[in-house]
Length: 139
Image 1: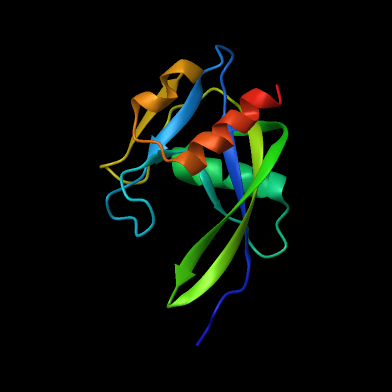
Image 2: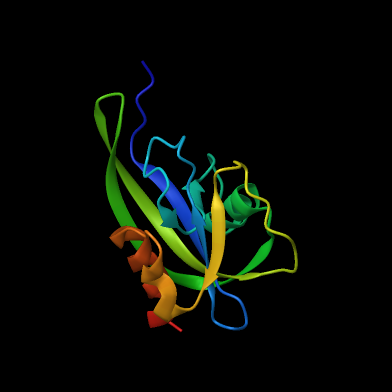
């Protein structure tokens, strides 16, 4: 059986020139945090640097391209895979979006641009909220 070890991830806090952050609602089909709002994030490919991975994940999850502004922090969390605990290590980046249309992979997903004061208007979990606040703290 293929049991993964620690996982490396990268998250994009996408902030526009009006200091609004892009949040995406996960599909109800997701095993992990279905229908919860958060930032574009995902696993790095083998040998992929976090800066490249975060831009790839942004494109895959939103259809947007962007430019990494800076790394704003790190996060970690535990998850489970086939009965085994996995430690997830995540690099968090502030990303400036390039012009384009948001295209979400699943029809039941949604996206919103929110100011800092509006972040808790959606069902965002504490973990994703902390990731977003890292970008504001380090600006």
